[in-house]
Length: 392
Image 1 (cartoon, one colour):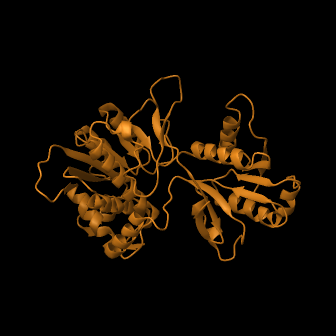
Image 2: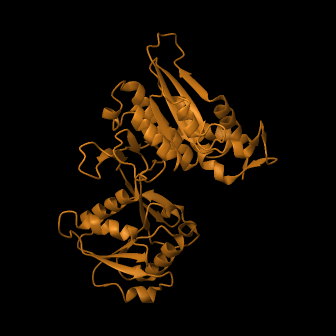
């Protein structure tokens, strides 16, 4: 639970809807750039009029959207506008009184120049379809999936899809561990990640890597695992699961083996959210690797600013959702105002990215010459070692 104070700024911003940002000096304004920002804040579920339905706290399920909006607001207050004018419209994507479908129907989004959304289906589909129809860039900020959207060249997916992570892991192994013994472990009937690797490995008509695909259950032990792997050469283990229980059991089985045999364990992008890696004295000296599109170095000046400002206002450190709200809003609003009429052509301009590089590439799923969407394919290889996260 979080205190009311953390929510007050977002509540008033969203009920006021519009946030106008302008250069202080009196220069002529030639264009107003309009940005719509969506996140699930659930105002109608939490507030009864202007009062919280609970006495002093708000539910945990709203904190991600709240943090994203708060980070976005701080980005808007920080922008170097160069005598330009921006109007940002902050929307609760889970509003009961003004749902996304109603906003679209009533023309409330027709004059937007950019839409940024920390949203999932169905709002993701609604905004993607609308953006394609109106030819407005829609940045899907946090949803790591294309949702089956096709033929939409105005959709940008910032949070890389699972297949892209698999491609990144495959490339990493090919470059650094191509001659090692490579094993991919997954649960029975959980073949999605395994199938991605098979598709990637055979993309050129023949397998580039020799990957042994093995089905395990959660009762795997170190002794049982040792019978399944060849220890005469260094070992690469791909943990092909998004489930914590299976991933932890696999790491438990690997841990004794890696003490006497060279071994690396590479997990999936959600593994950084598993509490088991951060327990005191857990997996000492054995790094748990994973990939992520979101990384901020400790000496980043924007991060220092956000940490200071966020703590000053909310009395806590910014979460990763607040960082994403800040970074993406700052970057893409800057691209919008500094590349008028040419936003899509300059989506990979790195000049304004406060935290890290993004690299959007067109994705084609058929023979259509038009991209189905654009996806950020810039990934960082991370490791959790002795409870600490660092970039490899």
